Length: 328
Image (cartoon, rainbow, N blue to C red; front, side, top):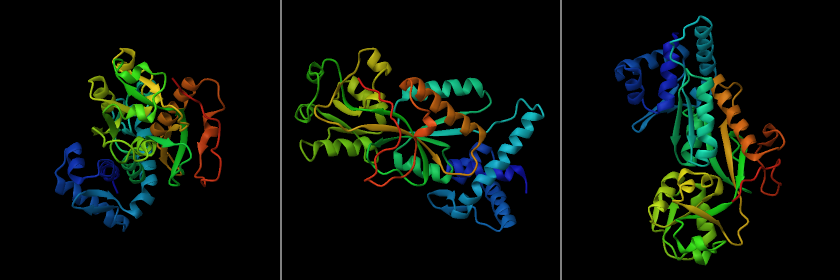
């Protein structure tokens, strides 16, 4: 067994495709495929499920993945101890629904890179279901997702609440809605609506808020960042958690603003998720801690965020822990 065989398996798992992994590793696809099959024969386990749409970890492969990661981390530590300063470090991949990008995500990755100059951070925008799948299969190390307060927590992940906020209506300052202190559902229906596509928590929240009223959405898009740009260009209004709008460059420049939703008591939680595993790569663990530190800074004096790691609960059970709030 050779170290590069394990690195190849990790690359295929991360990229979800033998072809893309071969391109990144600068190998021919047949050579990569044969190397992986040699490792599978040696272990006596099919590590990958090969489909026409791509390659993903098999159930047996997912069980072995933490041990593969342990070996690669041990090799990294050995190389570092030997003073190999130009080695290629493992990448840390973060999936995000583009929530709290400016106040949370960007400061965290910037500070992390300052303390981990040899580790590349890849930030990937995706829907929540895609983030969960990639976390399960080892394609993402961490995931940032929105969660409606009161919903069940998925059992497959360790979930830690970072921020708690209010849904708000995001509009241009020259919109008639911006002249109101709060926006009612009837008010909201007077403007073209920019919705998140199906698969996002805010898509489900807005449909629940409208309760079948009003015309179809004028536009739909992936993620808060494009939604805010569309609002700034005058295409309509959108509904987002306040932590995705407050302090955004477009809001600071006066291109967008926001108003609370009248009579609505829903809260949106920003959750940091990772796959439950006995061991976690050092870099991924350090980045996880960096998110917790930044959340503490944003929320002020609160109990240790480690105390707010949330376990799956039944709908009748109260939420765990004390939540920081971020509001207009």
